[in-house]
Image (cartoon, rainbow, N blue to C red; front, side, top):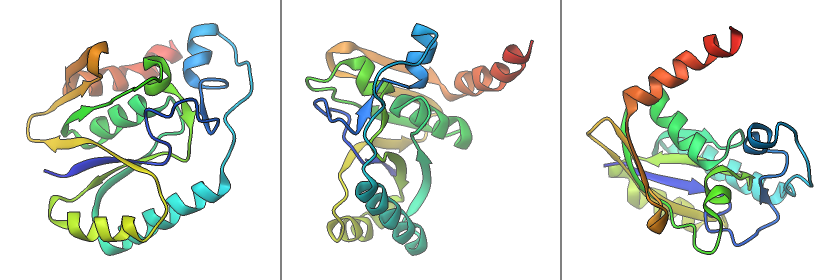
Length: 176
């Protein structure tokens, strides 16, 4: 199937200052306020990620692209499945990074893309010509399930339909 790839700062970032929970949706939800120093913006990395994206889109190698600015990596991955209705089988290795940071940190010029299965060679050529960090997270699958394994921390395995329902119901719930 198509591969799911993270462009930008890797999940096991090891404390990279271009990524963080300060000023994030996760912090707002848990603390009820925003505090601390937000992630450093790396304009050069942002530019390189956008250039690679434009070239990949123009070449027709991508099936989808979703930025990970609001809510972090796990939210971007879930939103991609919600929007497309397709399932994914993903694995995240937090390394020495906390699971919370790995899943919910914002920043890092991050974009989640799915690369068409028959365009992998073309994609590898494009990536090798740029200086963009990229991490293969898994594949798009035929079953409509959102599966995310996080090593020793356990896993998420949910029907995409459940994610879609929660997402659809969230706005009316907030308005009520």
